[in-house]
Amino acid sequence: MHGLFGHGSCFVKSKANKHLGSGLSSSKTGGGYTIRDGNKLYHSYRSGHIFYVVLALCASLLMFFSIYNYGGFLFTVSTAVERNSEVLPCEKMEKSPTISGVDENDEAIGDVVIGVDPDKDDDVSDGDENNNPEKDPDDTTDSETTSPVVNPQPNNTGGAVPQSDAVSMSYFDDAVFIGDSRTQGLQMYSGIKNGTFLALRGLSISTVSTYKFVDVTMGDHTETMTVTDALRLMKFGKVYISFGLNELGWQSNTIFAETYRDFIRKIKEINPSAIIYVENIIPMTKSASETSYASTGNAKIKVYNELIEKVCADEGVYYLDLASHFSDDEGNLDEARFETSTDGVHFKSAAYKEWANYLLTHTAEGMMKNTSVTSDTASE
Image (cartoon, rainbow, N blue to C red; front, side, top):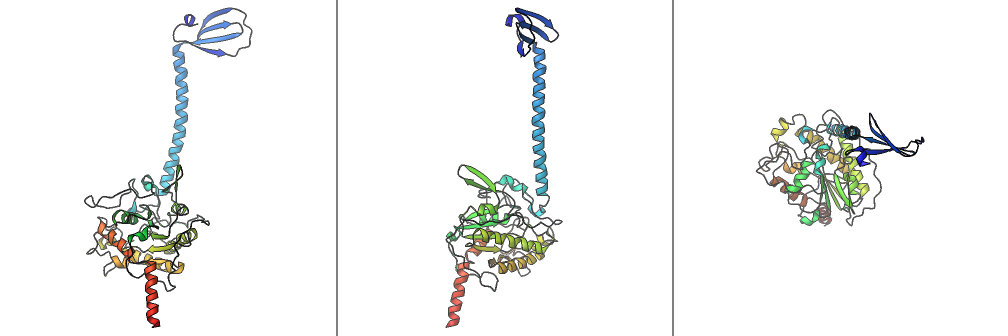
């Protein structure tokens, strides 16, 4: 056959049933050569025709994959736009897990946040100044998560946890820290090496239960999930919550308070034995409050802190008044004691170390011990 058709030809079998007679014959046609062998018909196409056939097939495959990928691209873009439509200027997302405004001459950023995929940082949503977030629709379910810690309940009078003798750093062994970029800074600069940090730049009280950024490895696979879903798989005894900075542009104070309340209740349902600490919002510098965040600065922080304190009293969880500890007489961040980054919102390492020291000296156990001593003294 090769000698008959020459180099560069190929055969395509045709399923013809017409009797063509016996013997072998060939003839030249416009499309190449035709060969007959009994009832079987074969066609030979020249190399030029093969080229066009292959080219057509490649074009078809290219078109298919282009449409497939283009559709995926459209989905990705639309999702990103929807998520980023609520991001506040003060916490605009980036691809790296760095802290906003940290100077290059400050300490090194350190390791990536544990359990957090930094590639997802630019997708998380926050409430902006024109749109109030809806209540989180996530339902909570009973969990088998248990903790050996018995939660010492705060008294019904409310108020902040008072100062007490410092506990050791091992107090954070079973602690989970949940928050935004400031909580990331606490992990990176404070000296707290134990505990679990589920923090992300731009995270808010409205997205903490809906945005998937925590990577959890189970056996031979890793799944990315929300904070609340990750908590259901963890054993923990304490939770520190710190939100409010990215929510300053919300129009409704009521929605802020109720969304905070809903998240606290989710944690209670996940682990009723956990000690829940809620940290109020540390103010920014006077300059930042009056310029960059003039409409949503320290005046709004003060309002939010009052709401957070009331929610804590209502829900029976511990309220940590870091704002008073870090403020000057005017209610601004005390710049004489605490150096900030260039944005006036985030801190240098010394302030994060002081934050950790505050947590070690303001504990539920210390509060209960002080209450017990006071009661014994009064009875005498």
